[in-house]
Length: 206
Image (tube, rainbow, N blue to C red):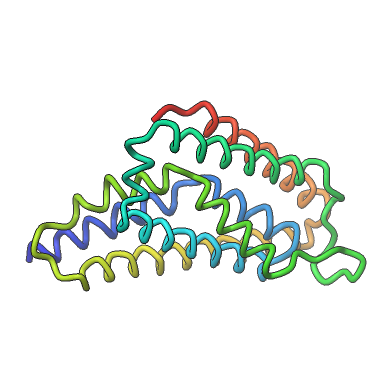
């Protein structure tokens, strides 16, 4: 019963975290508007891969290093802030997005979309801090290894379901009959959000 209660609590907390808008969500919106649902789906897969790498890093002590070393935390934080600002400025100053499928529009390759999702997640030290400081609260000595696998699997499934669905909805709305003007405004706003998130990350304290 205790195991079930802790799992339910973990799922509830994870769902709240996943649904909270942040850099990963902003990236999904950006790529859904710029290149369509396929690009946003690949970015979501990249975010999920980043999460798995953070879990692995935490297991081998890298996450703990970031938690205890101000220098390592600051370096990763500034790198993440710079990357978010870079993506934001690209959204602000890029050519206004046209209809998905327009052959005159440069497409975002699967690899590029996946890589953007991966780096958006990996360059956010708060993600690492979550898995180092919060996840252990739901594990007690003697728990089987399968428990950790189940917790991570639940997180990944919810993360992918949310981000992929979010990207498809944004893409459908952005490329509806309301069309180009709304898509252009949303792309610019997403760029500003990414820059704002980057600035916030740069000046955020631990």
